[in-house]
Structures are given as C-alpha cells and as structure tokens.
Image (cartoon, rainbow, N blue to C red; front, side, top):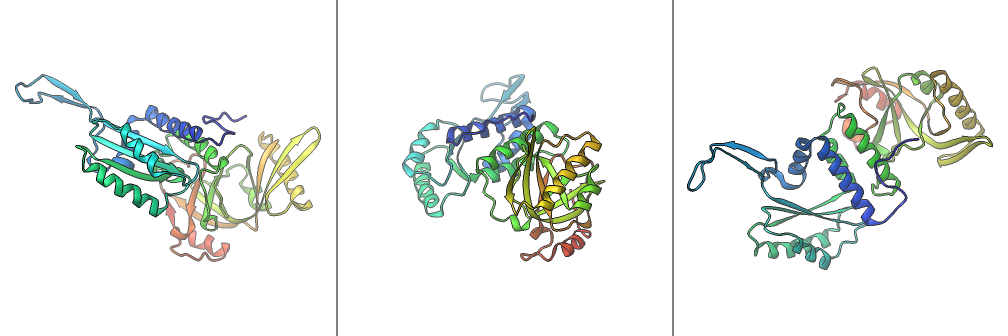
Length: 335
C-alpha cells in the first residue's frame, strides 16, 4: 500500500491549508536554498534576501565587530478557500496579523483565481493601507496548481525525496478537486514504460496504480531509453480491483466492453512475467499508439510523470491528428 504524506478524505479549508504548509515545510527541510529561492521568485521578487548572511568586520555606527549574522525579517499570511469565497472584511482584518516586518506578503490561495472585481477592490483598500505603513504589504493571489508548478521549477529529477512528496500532494489536490483542469485536450502525460513498453504499444493499453493521482489529459506518451517513444489519444479509463469474488470494474471514461475486459485480463497475466501483482490498477486505453521520438536532452530519466502542453510544443491552438503529432514530436526535444 502506498504511504501518503498528506491527509485525505476531508474537504475543510484547514486541511487544505495544513497540507500546503506541510508541502512547503518539507521543501524547506529538504533544501533551505531551494525554499528561499522559491519564495523570492514567487512572492517577494528581487528585493528579498531572506537567507542568513554571515559578515566579517562589518562596520556599524560606532564600532567594527569581528563578525555579524543577520537575517531580514519577513512574514507571510495565507488565506485559503475551496472556491473564490474571499471576503473583503476578512482580508482587511488579516492585515492586523502583520507587525513591523520588513517584507510582508498576504497570499490568497484557492483552486481558482480571485475574481478581477474582488481583487481590484481589495488591492485599492490595500493601497490606502500601505500609505500609512513603513513597510508595505504585498498581495499575491494564486492557485494550488500555480503553487505546484512554481515548486516544480526549483526541484529536478535528482530530488527524489521531494519529487515523491510533490507527487503525493498533487494526488491529494486532484482527489479533493483543488486543481481544476479544463484544457485536457492539449495535455500529454508521459509515463515510464521500459519493461512493459512492447505490451503497451501492441495492446494500445497502459496501466498504473489506482492510488496514483493524475490531472485530466487526452494524450498518453510512453517513455523509454531517453525519449518518448509512443503517443496515443485516450478513449477510455477503467479501474479494476481483483478480489476472491472476481474483478470489480469502474468506468471513469469511455465504455466497459467485453474486449476491454479481455485486455485487462491480458495485462494482469503479462504483468506476472515481471513480478507485478495487478490487483488494484487503473487502465488507460488509447485509440492507437503511434511511434515517435521526443528526446530528453538532459541526463537521467524523469521521476514520476511529466505533463506537456502540446499546443505550446507544436505552437498551435488546433492540434492535428495523433499520427501527425507523433511526427512533429520527432523534431522536438525537452529537458
């Protein structure tokens, strides 16, 4: 059974906040440098220097001490909502949470961005408030998805521990609908498929653990030997749980046909060759896997999954047929 880092089965805002703070604390514990660079990039920008500074022979007003250790003061106040339910009076009261910190940020966090009228109303109030302060409060409105994307920019394939933590946080966000994906039509999810690659391509089928979360995506790419070697458009997603009573199926997309039941049984049998016990899995069926060669130009295989925006890679807002996409990807690379 997969061990989860983050709480499940709750919908309260305090759980969403607690899980997000746990994610950030894990990032800090893993690498304070990556944590502070993340804060500076996303919330404080260029003027922020939060890390401890060690100085020798720093001149003060009346003396020159042998050494000093300093750190700029800062405070971040977070207000989390499950939808855009931010209220002006509540945000105004939150401003009293700040003291005389030099750097102050209020983050409003939700699955969707704050409505423009509401944001403008609060920021107009904030402008008047800041006029009375020595150090102003900055407001950053963001989403769970943007937060995850920002953290991704500061960890790489070698950060195995943080990759696992982030994947579990994503799983939690998808499960509790904190990340809303409406543009699945242009998303390709890339999965590692070394040992099972030939079976996946021949059967137009890929399987994964039922515990693994994922965002909505219409395309599936199979990675092996430093490249995405096949791409297919998904037409069905079915979970299958095996017990003494037989196999229990659940349709998440498409239809459950006798042919697809047979394919799932073939996958379970094929998995035994590699020591896999497929007792609780999710099966992704594609129309057809097409050969491609979308090369990764940096060392090491990716940790976990990667999601690509095909409209950006192909530089078009209208994707062609899957076979043509496969040909286009042969001329592209990624890192």
